[in-house]
Image (cartoon, rainbow, N blue to C red; front, side, top):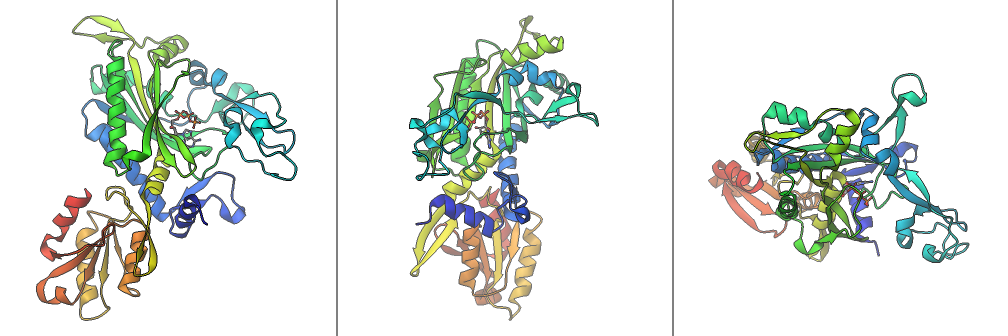
Length: 438
Ligand code: ATP
């Protein structure tokens, strides 16, 4: 039996969502490229997040900071010292993995040479391994020129907090949202795009007055869980995981977890980071980062509530959650029940046959819709097969120009999930679709 993950990986490859990176050279472990439909889906996920954070609120601004930052940033943040994972080796099979992931880790030699159960195996002591990728700035490869690829986007926000505050004239509480690449030299990447060494994060840091942090933390927990519900994730597949053991900077931390085919795993973290980040950057940079409250005449370092989501991990969640199979006319139909806002193609337009002026009418519909939404035109093969190909990539609506169109100017609109078909007057079509997609 093919597992759900195998089916999704194969669909992603076959239909152009996700390809193994550098495939013609045999691929490179845990690196993936987004294809024609995957890049659109990813863009839609990012747009949905950025819109919810910035366009729909007047207390959050966007930012796009550089990946390469001053190396002192990573000393101040604690990453040089603390961003490590405990690495252990199995003396039997030589596999390497994270000490905190021993029970899940697969033994490559199982069952012949190694007991296969690493939790009962002959392991080395854990060594601390820093996850940051290092490189050199400029042509000289010497210690003074070491620079890091950022392992999170958040630090770009902290070091720009004053710039954003002053240029936007906001008052605390306010937030900064950013989407961007992050790099971690993970010991055990895997599960398709769930854990990779290069990935994108969607992070928002909300700056609040100390004392109001607990209330804001709860508010943001609610907003972030709702965002997944509003974008179609089944609520029963999401849950909260409260961190009992907190990172040195955190006062409270919760993860939103999703029930992936490989088990419940983190999708997003929500953290109350106190004034740790700003006080460290103030100390290391020597620049005052305090906020002056003009009404109360108080000076303080704001506390930070962070919402930190993985873009690739969200995309995987949307794919996994949307994957469905049902039986139609004795055949298994697989489809992606993606939310229309996220679907890479919003609408497909088909002439029923390639004659009687139907292709010309369909072309006019495409021309009318294309500036407003992603449209796909197809005139080849049986209409049933054309529907199936669109179902498989999650296109919510298919429009067919048929013989009735020639007499009364209406088209058939077929819904992906319910297979329901309705007739819509061509003059109403654009509005009808926009109401359901935008
Ligand atoms: P984990 O415990 O799974 O390593 P983390 O707690 O270190 O994750 P954070 O530092 O809180 O993760 O990162 C925030 C978000 O960034 C995660 O919830 C996840 O969605 C995403 N993320 C982190 N590491 C990776 C990775 N290696 N690949 C893909 N996404 C990642």
